[in-house]
Length: 535
View 1 (cartoon, rainbow, N blue to C red):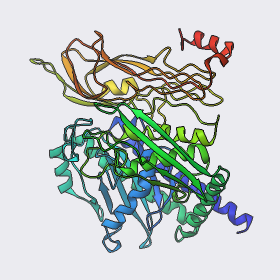
View 2 (cartoon, rainbow, N blue to C red):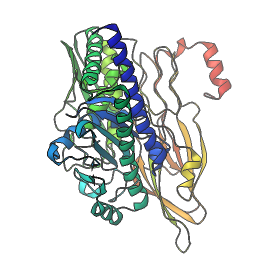
View 3 (cartoon, rainbow, N blue to C red):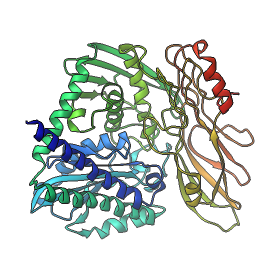
View 4 (cartoon, rainbow, N blue to C red):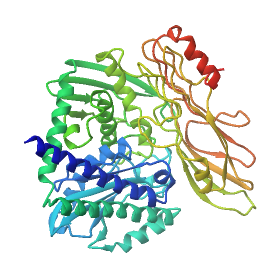
């Protein structure tokens, strides 16, 4: 390929990224759920006619993007080409064929040009409610956790499936939001399709075959070069997390040999009877993300750059099979990067960050009027995060959602969705682990029902009993705390009640420190005291 041809291809590649970015921004602008609109809990991408991911939007989470890299193939297995038509849109929330739990809606749309299938667009987003017990860990099978939608047509040749709409209206608590999000997802793919046709018409392309071949060859070659620079060998690590009612051990073995990295989760504890299990597709998504963060952070994420990472696991809490409950699959899944980083730190000493809070401190609140009072009934979802681990050359980031990358929701937007008051949301002093580099700080969040209301909430928290550990002699971050304002300690997982007149206080965990504390310079300590990070 000539230099001019390579530059031309690179320009078209960048143009394709802008197509999927506009696709994702459509979802952000039109979504009903605050988890999508405010936190960016979504993904969007374009795929070859045989289902291989060509490009993804920068907006989105690794758990969504990397599971969708496989989920499109499930759609193609279910719907044969002769049953695909212009104006179609397909949907599922099957955890094992989508993105890991029922609350994520995945939509796939074929893109035709002049009667020829040239691509697929896919997107996914988290809806606040999907029926059942609600977003929580208390279910003991997938059947309790909500409505499971198999791979079906949401739109057939431009006509919306009204039977599915009726099904949703009768099965979820706030159907207008859920149905609104379905239309938002479909519109997201449609915008991607329209922008792709504009691009192809402008450039004079008949298909994406040559462009996808260029993208895949460059991405694969760059990733393999990074793997070649790693030492050959095997490294293992274990990590203990809170679990639901008893601790859970996660285990991994990394093997770098040849031109692949094998990631095996043998030794991880068995499937839990509670809804904290993780399907392998979601585990794989965060395992690949963790490796890419260290080995190839600047290489675009697509089919070819993910291909050298091989993930295997026996059946366990990180490879839960149907009908295991999986509503809180993100809690285990978000711990996978810390688990893998621990193994990589043995292969790459002094180069890997310390453990962080990792799993989001999501909270689902069901608000209702107190007995004998009038008021609103609402479902409120709020995303919160703790601190990240300190890095080899930098302090950890405070109140930052790693590895998911979602935003912390604005207080005003959260209060607008239901009758609650967020009285306090601030950084948590002294929560970052001490070290040559300090761990990131967690948050303190104080929530109460509005006057005349009470609420139940679903706790989805970890690192309450097992804080983030430091690296290379750094200290552990502070443990998380769940309590009422009168000091009553609450459980870190499961549905619980906040009565009238009480406030819920969440103290999210801090990240671990890096390096011995005595090596932290006095200038940095003084800056911490001035900022109020330590007292």
